[in-house]
Length: 82
Image (cartoon, rainbow, N blue to C red; front, side, top):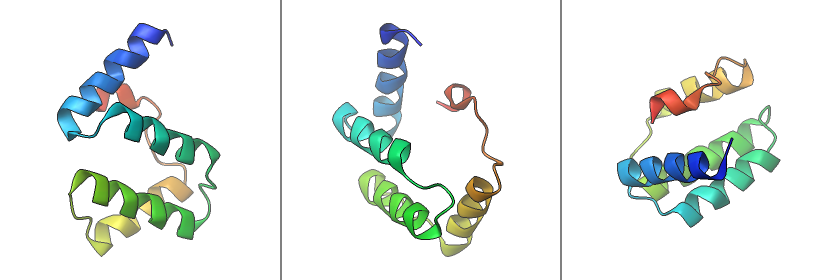
């Protein structure tokens, strides 16, 4: 992915979430180095995202997200969602 495309994606995420690029990049590094099969790690990341965006994540939604990640049911083409 080219540098321009990365910046474009980050800019669109920043516009939609009001979260600055540096925070997005920091979180991306955590995700990159995280253990996706560890529920505690996933919960920590979900709570951090919730805090950053100011959006509450219900227990039911958190469970669904964790289940999707652990069972590899997350779409790989995230660009179409931003």
